[in-house]
Image 1 (cartoon, one colour):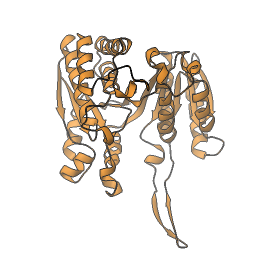
Image 2 (cartoon, helix red, strand yellow):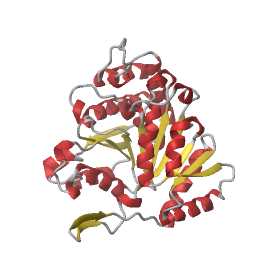
Image 3 (cartoon, one colour):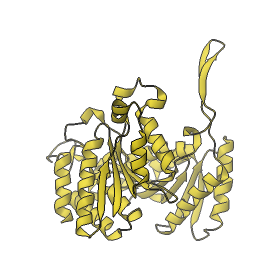
Image 4 (cartoon, rainbow, N blue to C red):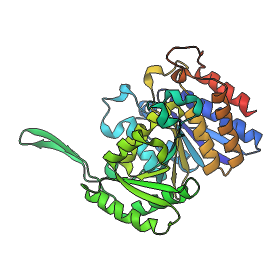
Length: 359
């Protein structure tokens, strides 16, 4: 029996999570998988209920699970909460406790949705299919020391960017191994002309590449990588980078897909439960209105089926159902052309349509 911990979170998180859970259970039934789900609190709703954004009970359920699904966390309601109690602190604690160091975020442009891309049609019509491999538990988000104070009458703050060679080595292996099952290309992104951390990053990645001579490899500085992602997105296969740069480049690359509602993600570690979540945020402006796009969550379920539950056939069936729904013209509000002409489906209705196509 595979146990899945669902953490709906805040904003639209509960809405998209509900559809993801429905699809997971339907796929499990279709392919004779034994799956059990349970829910737990995280983020702002957890803070409201317990005073902590990541309660001990939630941690226990996650560690006992075979995989964890996260909806979204955060919102302006908690902007004034102390830093260590904010919803985002719960998310960082979840990643740290699960030791999920490799964030995999695929960016794919569906041909039927190419017109929604923020990039020129000729750039996306070539076919954009890239994967960002982002190191998730190091870098400036977790580096010590950090703090703030007053000096000479001026307020200041500081954070520390830090990586050790083993953290770099293990994420590099993930990127090169993954490239072997794709198009065999890795682009490592850093800022080695300025940062000592990036010089270490570059040296260790080059060492690891010597074990993968069948994979083509290049370096790009992060500023140049940002420009190249919008100038020639179809040229990229696997992009390997650190936590901060990966956070920024992932959202930049999302412009190619046209909607964050179409971007799934997986975060994996060594032996710990995998963490799966849509790339979008909590979108409090549309929460509770049945307007959210659940497809990123549903595609995250497909990644869970393949990577944590060893059910590739079920994963493929979910992915094919998503492609068929898009191919046949069904859209949520974020994917309706500016001129109209398409009646959008609500979050629940899109979930219903996926279940219908899944069969």
